[in-house]
Length: 296
Image 1 (cartoon, rainbow, N blue to C red):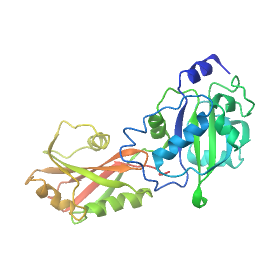
Image 2: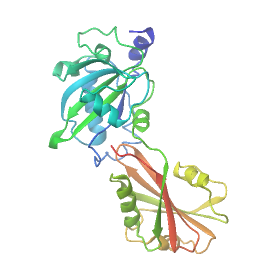
Image 3: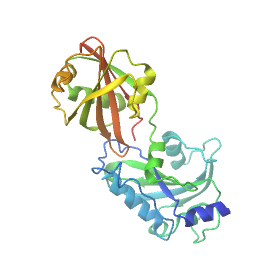
Image 4: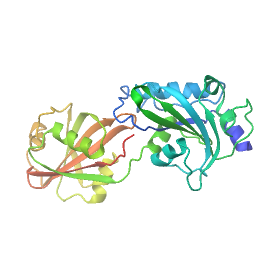
């Protein structure tokens, strides 16, 4: 074990990185994404069990029984879900070294992360590599399976690691008619991504004199302001039956060359998701955009 690993573990930088398989509709406790999720797990006796309990609290779902733990070295790379799932089943992945596989027992939950980092549960925490990761494979109630990896030499919070692992990437844009309701807009994005979202909790109306560019839309989706657009109204808890074409009037906005609506949804575990809907034909048609996510 390197000196960096020893310093890192003693400074409580062992954090959970969530990668969930088959947990697509797990609800997150209210405020978890911005509050309880921002936690770390100190590497001490019982840290693995504490980490699983913390994740259970964040998702609101039982994590089930620990089947096995793998210590792997991927050179510090973030592996996609299919590769992690393959490792759990014993397949080989290019440029990934499996340091050891340990059957899931109560003893593993009561030890330290450092003890498991080299793939051998022997009560010693002085081996492994600087880029070791631990992959916990659990069998959840109802036949679901999921796996959870631990960032070994990382100073990130649980929440930062979760965001890094959940595959949120390119902008997804859907064309909707003006009579599409708020509920219909939500359902369209749920179908496109295969995962349930909560809300919307609010909708902001923005206006401008020019058509927003793709870069402008991406900026808005990321929660930032665009100089050419003004936020002129906010409605908390918009009615799910309102049509997109009605929202401006409901917000007291009568006319603008370009109208946008910025919806705030929440995705379980990941947190706030912004959906931007823009119309330039007085509400007859809308282009609605959000960050695409790969689900869990």
